[in-house]
Length: 363
Image (cartoon, rainbow, N blue to C red):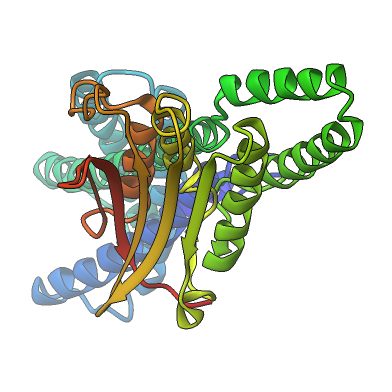
């Protein structure tokens, strides 16, 4: 549309501005076509031949387009004004442009009527001002509504980006949470093995820890893993912990063959296994079993981590639930809104169990 021809997208212009400019061009063109057709119909009803007056209306619309384009540019320049100020400005500008358009219209009428003399008609001139003012005011209202809709959409997009970035940062923080006590205790165990002359065991422990850290820290927090890969990572972690507890910790992993290729969030079990070691082998004397099981029921996958507990060790309640377990619950709820669950509590035989439920997903 020619009324905003100077608004065509330029190099380096923001995408939202470019979208607004293209929409302004399209709507402006439709608006001019509507004005032209309505004017032709109305003047035809009034007895003016639409064919003979077409040239004059085209010239008039061209002038109107130029003036409306200037009006639009001014509104863009003053886009920081309040809505009330913009409404008043649009009304005042529409009157000024309506008067200017009326003079142009009268000049065109004089030229088209030449060599006949045209008498000044103040009433007709006033009607033209009202008609032209309504055209400009209608266009300015349409443009402001269009600009506001794009501004609102841009704000929503920016807010969504901020939320996505915040969620990504939070997910990475949750995902990369690694219990520092695990590292400290493992390093202390290595030092103890070296002092005892068990250099081969210490070397194996260093290699196991290095492989585990290299694998886990390289994972993308939004990357899914096959369930068998997730289980393998937890098995590697528990193998390191078993060395630290002198093999008094027994590990049971139950993964049915038909569930191995299901997808799960990476390291979703890590905080649960860390918690199991902490409350199991870390506090209970004698043999301790840490069990990890996977089960499928209908369209749900259930992952369970269970461990023996010391008799005096209370079962964590909602208020005392560790940060790691809370993070797991948050990860699940964010990843599968309304389609996941985490249950935890002490079993009848004195063990502590955490069960994660999530949708079954196949690669």
